[in-house]
Length: 293
Image (cartoon, rainbow, N blue to C red; front, side, top):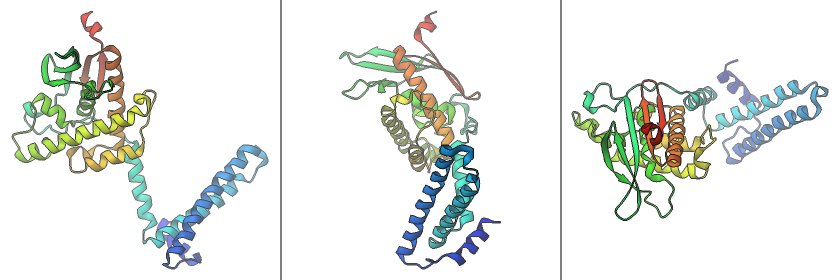
């Protein structure tokens, strides 16, 4: 049976099919109750095992009741159950699919493209005032200004350029990295302003700060294999006008987790090297000691 047909036929058994707000509340409470019944049936199976021989029949019944309430709520809200199901599949596909790392700037001159391979170095230095700084180098050339933690708490944020490097390699997107390496797409003024300009840079820096705040509450993502959907939804919302919108939530999750793996290694070893290959989708940490060897 098609979901649309099920929804149409379910309306004939809806005793609260009016448009009063209380009618919708009844169905919302019914949905909550039936979801609880589904969990309760499975709990009985875990408790009684094979002695609960009708558990699948009971689960089918309770799941059916849950579906009825979902259809009823859709009808009250003038939503089509088919469309709800399709949108859900699209959302879950975006959440769990991880695509390639192909370039988003392949149509531009080589001097305006993000590098596809090479080595970044994040080098610790001491400033004139004794503060701890980090300098970024790409293939031996200095990029950007030295960074501090910019905080009264020494939390290693001076190494946060590695997040931008991870976005550049795994997402093919990083206005911050473009600015640092002087690879903005100035040959196209519209793209230069809209995709590589100040607003895009602020958005990326905001994402890095947001994710860092999230990570401080989750052991800097050590041992974490999934990040919260709410975080990924926020990223999708703020990057909607930007070319990186083509990347999935799964792509963002991969870039975030890999960036923090490298961040933890850099903080633990007081700097180091990041060898990367965007075509292969890899970023590999090397300590400065390994370089000396």
